[in-house]
Image (cartoon, rainbow, N blue to C red; front, side, top):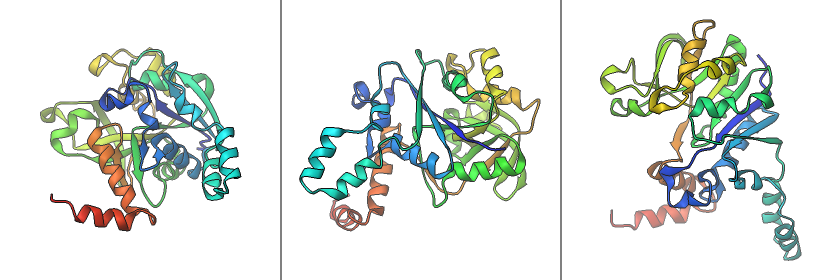
Length: 287
């Protein structure tokens, strides 16, 4: 299975990050100094993706504008001799083939993915949720792609979550199939803790086959009155095996205020230019 394209879901109202997301899409909010959407695109490219389709809410185009040249700013940096900043800035210009798809109404993840069908075409593809930032030595998507190529099957990223939080996620029922690898036998979207089949959640990385599009299109609204991708995956499971991989790395929910703060602090501590003084500052706080 060769995957060339990725769908990045960056639509929705961003209500968890209000009031910051009133005007600025939450995917543009920076983790230290790098917008979340840039971190996602960089992971996709590092994983071997050649084309990225970003699903956005109509009118909220800053997510795409971030990857366009800023000619006035580049001229200023060049004229003032700030060449390091100029090189860094130019790396964000047209990093790969980027196209947009639009989700006019927030009708769920499955519906958002469906909007990219025309751009994806009839080939396997990856899906990113732009809220999920994953810090790992090997890109998380690359880990999933390696499994997908080996098993010739769809793969989802798996994370063990606290039992009290299973109602926030799509939760899987699965059997071991190798090192960190599971074969799915069932799944349910946002179950109550007492009805959850496990504490293993699907988080924002998927490798899917194009037959998922027809299942999404034919599906009905599920949990929360939305068209859930989990429901379509459950239907897909009837016709082909689906695997889940417990990825190596740490996941941050950058679409949540506390998760965003955690990501900002921990990525800052890793920076060679910020880590030392920032660590000293934190040690000096009366916590």
